[in-house]
Image (cartoon, rainbow, N blue to C red; front, side, top):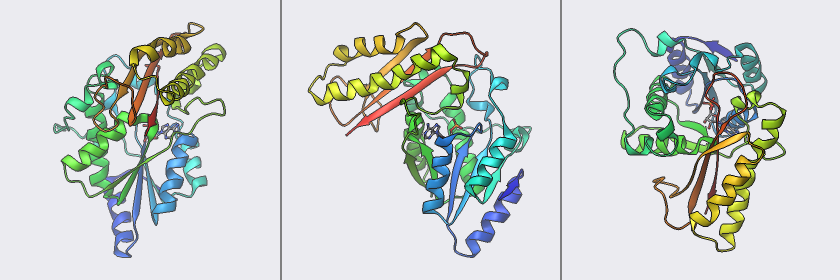
Length: 286
Ligand code: AMP
């Protein structure tokens, strides 16, 4: 495994592989790697000859009220994890490599970036799309792997690839969970005993809604009340939104009938670091 910091080094490595006819997979991350990230690396390794992982805490996707500096950055543990997964290249640029002085052009996501997460995090998806587009042009991968955990993000990336004619295949891999169902997240380390226990309510609400929908309940209003109670039980979390939406447009549905995506965001209320402690999860029902 090689670790590189410059764009030129990434391009040289990838050009060498291309010259030998090898395919390249990219896994973009912000580090603080866990099994969810590792599952994306394994997917890339299964499907591509070479795998590039980027580790970059992207400042432009943090809203003004979110504390960028509090985001965990355990770089040496992350590099060891990449080594264990036997990825080929880890790209760890500094902020000025990605956003040099004078940087100005950005991607504007539009309406898709203003729904759900976008409502609570203005500008977030413009920042995500901009950095992902840059990573695509730096690495020029055949395939890029994202997690279903950030479902809205994956829909936006797919849209960007279509709208901007980017020659990359997008793979969305399943959410990796703890044994009790909590979706793995770099932010889980900030959950203390009580809020950790309460956090399983988020996934349980999704599981309950899925089975209720299967039995024919179809009015979002009938589902939301019980889901909210499940999430807020114990007083550790406050529900931000529950979205019943079309899985490709993310527009809200009048009836919760498949195919649909159910998106949840909840805020942790227990004392913790200044970091924006929102927890998101989703289920897709086909
Ligand atoms: P992040 O480092 O949080 O920006 O995430 C990098 C990638 O890992 C994104 O594509 C996420 O969707 C994905 N990811 C995060 N958590 C999980 C998880 N629990 N299971 C699968 N993928 C995940």
